[in-house]
Amino acid sequence: MSQHHDVLTAAFLQAHGVALSKPLRDWLTRVSFLARAQSSVEKKEQYERWALRAVEDAVKAPGGVAAVAWSKQSTVMPPDSPDCVSEWWQESRRPCAASSSGAAALHENRTRAALLAETMQRAPAPLQPFVQQGFSLYDREVALGRRRYEQVTFVEMLNIATSLQAKARPPPVSLPAPSPTPPLPTPSCDALAIQTAATRQTAAAVPTSHKRTASEAMPHEPPHKRVVPATGPVGSLTDKAFFFQLAGIVDADVAAPREFVGMSRELERTYTRYEPLVEDIRPLAVLKEAYRHITTRAATLEQTEGKKASQKYLSDQLKGMRQDLRVQNIVDNFTVMVYEVHARLCLEIGDIGEFNQCQGGLKQFYAMDAVDLKHCDVKNFFLYRLVYLTLSGQYDSLSTELIHFTNAQLQGKDRVGSSIPREPVNRVLALCAACNNGDIPSLCRLLLSFETEMTYLVRIYLQKLRIMWLKEILTAMKGSLTLRFLMASLGFTPLPYGKKRQLFWLDGTEESAALRFTELFQTLKMELPPEFSFHAEVTRTKHTGLNSQARYPSLDAATSLKAINDYLVFLSTRKDAGRT
Image (cartoon, rainbow, N blue to C red; front, side):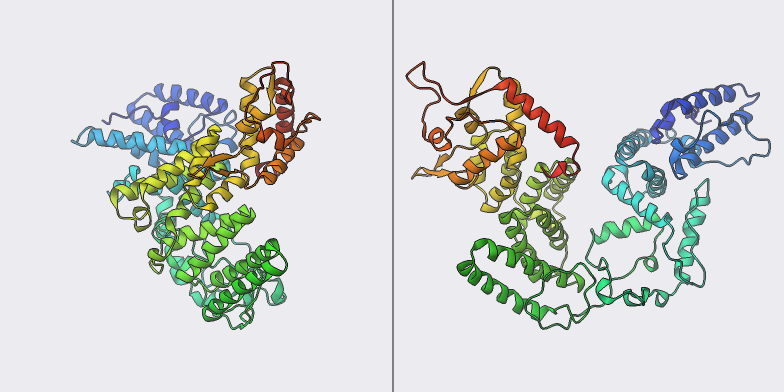
């Protein structure tokens, strides 16, 4: 007899990621009582298998356990109910203590339970049934000794579940095929294995020639209205193959990138939202010539029309070049150079959306063998990515990046992670901590040790950070606070550096700092005193003078804190609140 007897318990179901509502808990209490009331051990186990299978099928069904009315769910096992052994029952009956690996198996189960709980917590409700399917598939890999739970993160399990969800979703347009692929049913017992095998056979039977190209899919649609297909590289090839293998997706189900070689000879082209034709796309040789052309013209525009006009022209042209490279699946050092130049330009002009697209593409390109990392700025863009994830609040992605970097440093197998030294990573983490803590002197000193683009990146989020810093200051203090004190605490005063005692302005110049200071108080709807002068406060060397009766421009902490709280309440009602 196995040691694992109690399967109709809250602890057992929670270990498998089941969210226990009150109706489900009540139903579980009733069935566990009825199981103990059975006349024999065989009938008790048969009843437990039936009840456990009911919960397992509900978890894997669309909507999960929340879609079942457990208050109306019967606790009586039908007489003709088939005695089907579920996967959870088999797992509970595995003899773990009979071998010398009992402690390891117990640790494996605890790791699985913790991983499942975290994955279910982060997965949206429609995705949770597919998380259970993904864990069932991964259980088989673990049972065969191919993988371990310590090797997988919740992000990878969410990707597996997303692949399963995409596989289960019916196609929008049914095309004639020799044998249609059946939709993914709700798996129970051995149905999952049968479904996986059937999917592979069906996919192998469908020839790839039956798949229509983009031009054949909608014959009556104008060419300039066609949407660009996703042809760029997505994710690591190894991880992608592993997810598809777990999800039962074979190569025939995955659309291969089409062969596309441009024919245009134009040196200038901006980005288009519609599918570009072959006549619109420039081949690699023309793109290299176009890059020299647009950089030369941008320098000319800067002299004639100003720097902003030059930057806008160059950004539009680089975005068009990125589209040409992506459509043709060109990945080499020239592609990396275009993305890096555009990313730096986006930081300078404050376009954080385009920068995010560039750095996301660079992360994929650096991992490809076709790219020579000796000619790439891998280190700085990894540092930019860490700061971007911190300031935008994407802490899950930040943790994943740091985990991968640590593993690469320890194991030395990842050529990208192992090529990045630890010292600048430690400094950039200190920079992130200074941003979160409002440590202005440390923030300025650390920014001086990085490239100028790092200052541009932090400057994009300065308004958001300063509101956070100001709220913390006003929460901790009472009474009147001089504006000079607030200016120094929020980074509006310069920091002397170097042997010549040059001044480093967090906003670039004194004029920009004065403008940002005024904009901050206008945004918070806080009135500045009439006698306030930004330049006078910056040049004043002391917070108080020799005359104790002298009054300096100040604000009341309680009134200012109320204005900030009112602004944050208003901000929470806006759809674009995350951009502020």
